[in-house]
Amino acid sequence: MTQVEGIDRQLISEEDIRTRIKELANQISEDFEGETVILVGLLKGSVVFLADLAREITVPCHMDFMSVTSYGNDTESSGEVRFLKDLDEDINGKNVIIVEDIIDTGYTLREVVKVLGARSPKTINICTLLNKVSRRLVDIPVTYNGFDIPDEFVVGFGLDYAQKYRNLKYVGVLKITEE
Ligand code: IMP
Ligand code: MG
Image (tube, rainbow, N blue to C red; front, side, top):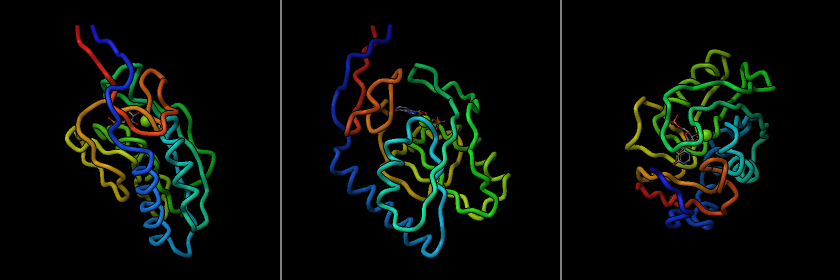
């Protein structure tokens, strides 16, 4: 049986996250100078990251949200992606930046990019806080990448395990024991 007993250790500190978010926001502000961007957050994991990122971006910036799911209350991907909530805004001709908490297999973003790309945005880019590169099953071009992390189940800064730990100020590794 799999048992979860809290946080094993801190992986990325609050300060390191803050610094990296500023760098990503500076890069976005430079790349889109004179333009408006729409940050598309994938609910719910990206909310904390998006809120901090948006406040460091200096170009005009809209926020919109989508809800898709590929995970139940488990730590393994089902491979299946369901769309639960669509965007409010029309993205035709707009600069879309998809904001994600973590890219694991890449299945989720592959589907989201396919759906949003079909709506003829001017540009479409991906910004992720965390990247589990070794777990990738489909190729996803990531323009703005916060941190490459090892293949461990992480929580905090928006990321959850069974809806818990989203409000941690840092990213930590979940303590999982197999019995
Ligand atoms: P993908 O479709 O396999 O790339 O999975 C992406 C989604 O899986 C993320 O948006 C997260 O919701 C979830 N996920 C993947 N790895 C983790 C993790 O280590 N902690 C928490 N959620 C994760
Ligand atoms: Mg997610």
